[in-house]
Length: 72
Image (cartoon, rainbow, N blue to C red; front, side):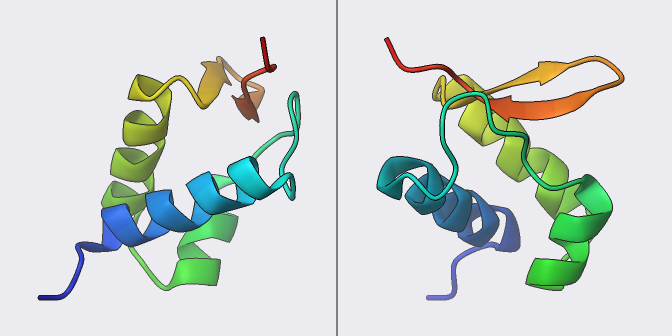
């Protein structure tokens, strides 16, 4: 079974965070950049970010972007 687009995006971003490619405090690429990179729509990117936020891996800062959560 094919994974939903949002899940695929979230999985890839999660792996980048866990492997250290994206470190604490790093800003995620913009929605438009993520759409282009993964060839998905706005909704898939939004759902992926919501999923990562719910896991405590990223947080949003209104008007600034989405950032990797600082490690404990």
